[in-house]
Image 1 (cartoon, one colour):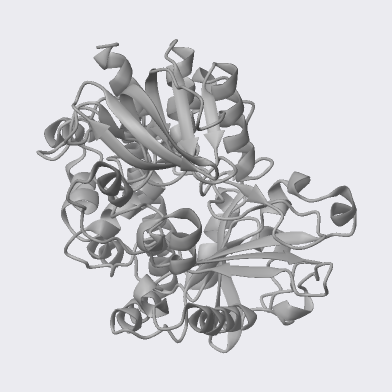
Image 2 (cartoon, rainbow, N blue to C red):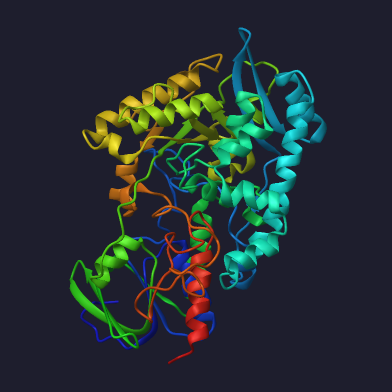
Length: 522
C-alpha cells in the first residue's frame, strides 16, 4: 500500500499492531467494518512475538511476553484462532538453604506431593492448610471476576456484590496484600512465594498504601477463572500470527512500516496522519483505536499527557545444552524448571531488594523467576536441538526500576545480569555458564533487556510492561462504559493502559471493538 495512493474512509483505523490491536481488528472486520491497522515496525505482534535471537540457532523464543493467563477463551473462539495453550503440571519450585542444607518448596504434581513438599520445608501441616484456604478464596474470586473482563465495567458495588465475600474483598481490595500474607503464613519462603504475584512488573512494597501491588496480585490470580499461567504452544508469536491471520481473513488491511504521527478528530470523524519510508499519508475514519500507551495517545491527539510510567524488570532469554543440576537433589530439574523457579524471593529478601532499589541502588540479591518453555512445548526448537536435549530458560527479574539504568544502561545491565545469575548459581550444582549453548559465532546464547531497552524497542513508557499502573476492574468517575474511552468520543484506547489492560489478554482490544459496535456507524 503506497502512502501516495488515495485512501478511502475506513470505519476504523487502529494505531498499533500489537495483540490488542489485532483482536480489535478481527472483531470489527468480522462485523463487516472496514479496518486499517497501522503498525510502526515491519511486523505485527508488539511485545507478544517470537524471534530467533541467537545467530545460526534454530530456537524461536518468546522474546518479551512469555506466558498466557488472561486471554479469555471467548476471544479465541469468537475469532476462530488456530492457537492453543498448554498447562503446566508444576506451579513453582523455590530453592532455599535451611540449617546448612539445600532444600526447597515444590508446588504442583498433585495435592499429596504439594502437601509433602510443604511439610518437608516447614516441618508441619500449618502452612499447607493456610495455603489451601488462601488460594481457595482467591480461586472463588477468580471464577466470579474473570467473566466480567469482557463485559461493560461493573461499578465497585456491583463487583463487590458479585464476589460476595467480605473477607476476600478486604484482603484484595482494601488493605495492603502484605497484611494478609503476614496474617496467614508464618514461613518466610512461603510468604515470598505468595507475594511474588503482586510484584511482576510492579515496583512496590508489600505494604504500599497505593495498593498497586494488590491490583497486580489480582490480575495474576484471576486469569482464566483459575489463575493458571499457561505456555503458548509455538511461542507467543503463534498467538499474534493467528490474530493477524484472522484479521486479514476477515478483510482488515494491515500496513506494517506505517507509523502514526497525528490524530485529528472532531468527535465524529477523524484523520490519522502516518509516516512511511516514502513519505506521509492520511487515512480517515469514523473511529480510531489506539493500541499504544496513554502517553503515545496524548502525543498523537496533542492532549495533556498522563504522569510518567516506570517499568521495573529485567528480561533474560537463554538457550542451554542441558538443564543444570540442582543442589537440592530431591527435585528433578525437569520438574523444577517446568513451573516458575523462584530465586531470592523470600519475603524478607523481596523487602530488602525493594528498599535498596527505592534508595537508588541495584539490589545486592536481585529477585527473579525462571521457567523452561521447551519442557512443556518443544516445538519452539528445531528437531536437531530437541534431539540433542537443548532447553530454553526465560528469566524475569523484579525490583529493578528504570531509574537505576539511566546513568549507563549497558553497564548497569551487565552488572545486574551478573548479580542475578550469581543468585541463580547459588542453588545449582554446576555453573549455569557451563550449560549455555553457543551461537554460530561462538557467543553464549543469552540476552538481557532492561526497562530502557523495552522503551526503546517497543515504545513501552519507562519500560512499563503494563503501560501504567494496573487499574481496578470496576468503573469510577474516570472510566467510561468499557474502560477504553478517551476525551474524544470516537478515539478509544485499546492498549495495555486501558482499564482492565495489562498482560497478554486481548481484553482491551475486545472491549474497544464492542464500544465501536455499540456506537453503530454514526
